[in-house]
Image 1 (cartoon, one colour):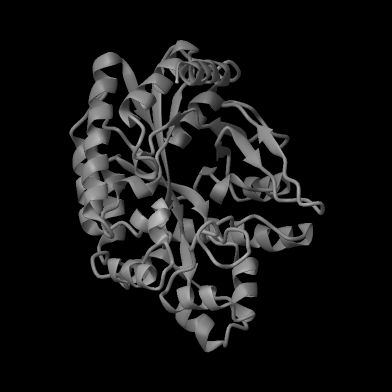
Image 2: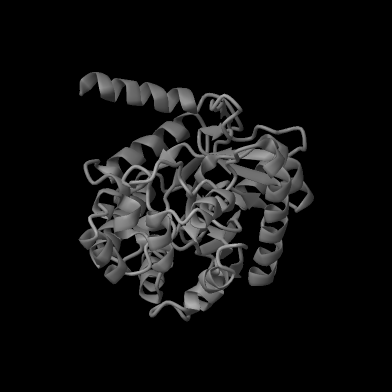
Length: 377
């Protein structure tokens, strides 16, 4: 355990050596998956367990779903209860999936064609979500919920449609329950995850992916009235060839984990390309790299507040912004309310301790940070 802790501390410091620096203590909270479907209901969850599909072994299947009105109100209450030295509340950079499969139309086509619907249309079909988009916009007005682009769907359409067309029993069964995300680790099917939207079987699929990015930005603009300046690829998997399309669509900043994961090549191998905050690609786009993690829903064994505080401290030690990864799963209680309650309590504790330890901390969105770096200040 001692050696593990030493390695963790060394890793935190090494990760913060390169990149843009500032004396300002900047905190960005990046939260993925808003708008994307996952587990449709507790009833569906229970029926899968009864069918011996061990969704209880997958944290996302256990807890993640579209955020209900109650989920959003509870999250906003926590954010509004804290302010930084500039009077700003903590703000969630909410990375939004703007569309989901239109199950009825796909079924009506006898699985011969793919159709999608906007995420707000999906939310209206859920029992406690009709006003969710309105609440997002209230959060935008209060500057505590700031949408940015995560993709059109959180779904590898070609792979999913292949299994549907082949009448794969488990995928068809999930489809009948208006879901697609049965983790391959608990699945009876031998396949990759459906969640990696920009994975491909052959590089020729990139042209279709370019169109998806263009459509995603168009829908995003329709929903929120502005173009997203930043983008993060689902599952952190994308081919660098897509960055030119992102640039053409107005994407100036690429959010990333510590490594960009490339799609598998012909031999089945991937590359893991390390980036750093402030790095520029050939299109002049800046990378914003996450260096802190607050994901209590996916690992109940960790002391998440203490771990995240340690990571923030390491970032500030090297004069780096603290960019925190914190997915939607941590803040939803539509499937299990206790998940939301427990994790919001920890978020509240984290924010309180951050402001006590660093009273000069400043909360920003991803694109605000990108603008600051671009300005040269």
